Amino acid sequence: MSTSRRLRAARVRVVGAAFLATASVLLLGGCAAGTHPGAAATIGDTEISVGDLDKSTNAIQGAVGEQEVAPAAVLGLLVDNELAAQVLDQRSITVSEAEIVPAMKVVVDQSLYEKFAANPVTNDFLRNSARALIGRIKLAGGTGITDPNAQQLNTDGGKVLEDAAKKITVNVAPRYGKWDGAKVDGTSGSLSDLSEQSKPTPTPPAQGEQPQG
Image (cartoon, rainbow, N blue to C red; front, side, top):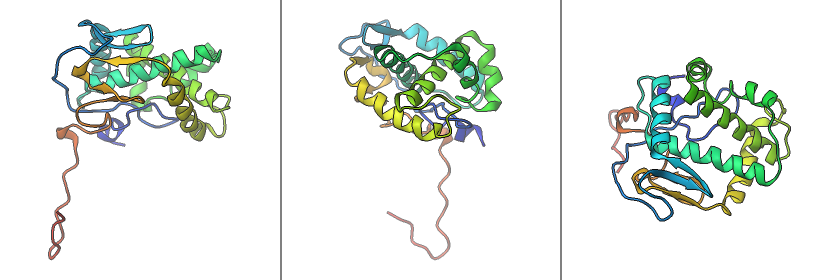
């Protein structure tokens, strides 16, 4: 699987799936209601500072390599992880260390795992992503990543999480996009949109075919 394909997913998925999203870099400034100049986003009473976002983006960029990683895409993942943590706490759903460690190895492509695990910042990101993954599975009634229906339960749990998260106030600084009630939505319309450099080259129409409008 190419690096470009690995980076298209905006959310953490089950075994073997890539999770990093890419998006056009957002240049708009300003602060949303509920945030201040030093905040990239607030989730309930928890703040993700611009400094923390920059550290996470730089660390992930270093692990990924060539493909550009947009701060807005990273912020979307950080918000997702925090929402999962808050919903799990509200519902008294626990995730043990014994569950987190093996799950850390399935939330990123295996070719990237060692790089993510080696850096304290990306290692912490892996841990939070692993907890969120297990949490989604448990929210749907599953037992964890070893559940035979883990992939479907992850999807179903994501819907449960999304519904529960509507009761949590989320604010995002405009420079990174906006919170649409379910995700951080950048000016490109989706966190999973590819940057211009990584979009596939359109296949020219075969001889005799009229190009589509």
